[in-house]
Length: 270
Ligand SMILES: [Zn+2]
Ligand SMILES: [Zn+2]
Image (cartoon, rainbow, N blue to C red):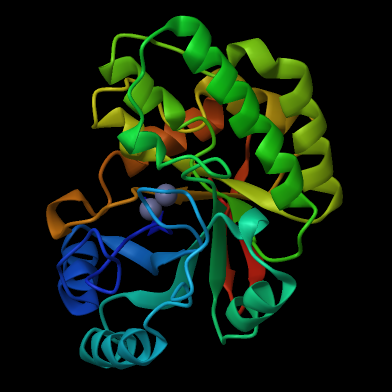
């Protein structure tokens, strides 16, 4: 099976500690054909949700590690360099320009916190209505994001369920179908895509991000660009549940999935 992992983190992310070489080696050992390292470049401070001044990523170290890993594993894996651009909808136009002008293969656009709120990981969830309210705001902020030409796919849509479920509130995207359909039309018409993030299949959530029903909606609305990613932050998680993810794509009606090179999509038969 042709496996691709387009969401992985190295020590160039604040929440991971393995080198790109270690991550890519794990990918090669697991039989992944094409892999993209997508370290965090987040606009907001994790705790406050306010924009940081040092949000541009450690580009020099990224390039150094990427060059080292690519050269060492050139016969084993097709390695690409991307980023996970967090909260781009909170960034100024010049911040966005500074990030998107970098030479990259791929950009995931993710929202990890609402404007002025801490990361979803840090919120104290106390009621189902509070969760529903936060999910509604989360969906709405994606409309700001999709208007910006600064990403290739939307990251882990609906991953808020991970943290809410841990707090005892199993709340997905089910209450927001009509808005999500509108969002998917904008994504489709803008030539952008979504990712199928398999981390939810190993972290106790019990579903991928987005969940199958939402993935089906995207396909039914003509969505074609979809990447697969483990969102691994350590070598042992590289490639995890990718085969399950590909099965979900088939179930949702996809016949192709996508990888990116120099920000351009390439389609691979499922
Ligand atoms: Zn993320
Ligand atoms: Zn990530």
